[in-house]
Length: 206
Image (cartoon, rainbow, N blue to C red; front, side):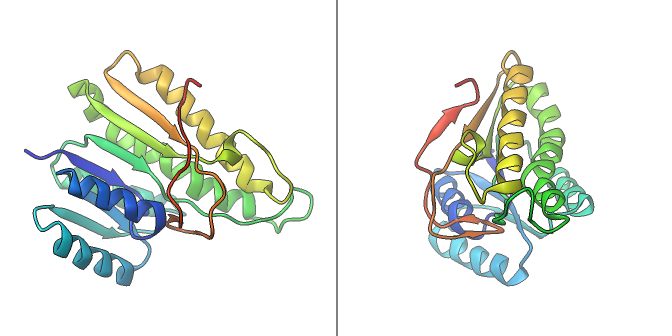
């Protein structure tokens, strides 16, 4: 059976590029997006370029727990073991802690951290049972360097990097690799990721 990639936020930017890369490498793919239109466009593109790739897609909003739960259950319902999980769904909102609107921290934490946390909890039991798997968390240089106007975004990305380090310690004796990806500045940011490929990869132990 072909290997399986699960990627959150997979129809734009980095997520789109990663999906195509894994499809060209012989993986089947489970992915999600808030936009049905984007998913349909992505599915048609994958079928044209990688007809051998079996694709599973779901419209899901990972900004709330219900959406994450729906995607987690969708993954389980495929009946396929997950070989690689890429937590890519994310959002950027500029601001400063003292003046950004109420609710920004909660929204960014929901998308950038809590969705990754719950998806990891959904797939790691199977990885542990097989003693095999790789988890990538799409962090940021903002995970290690605070900057003015980063506000809650920096906080959320620091938290995601912390989650990655904790997971690595928990899973390193169980045959599972955990990697933080730290992209630098990009042209634009969106729900699905960013427009340029990552310029820096770091193991969570670095």
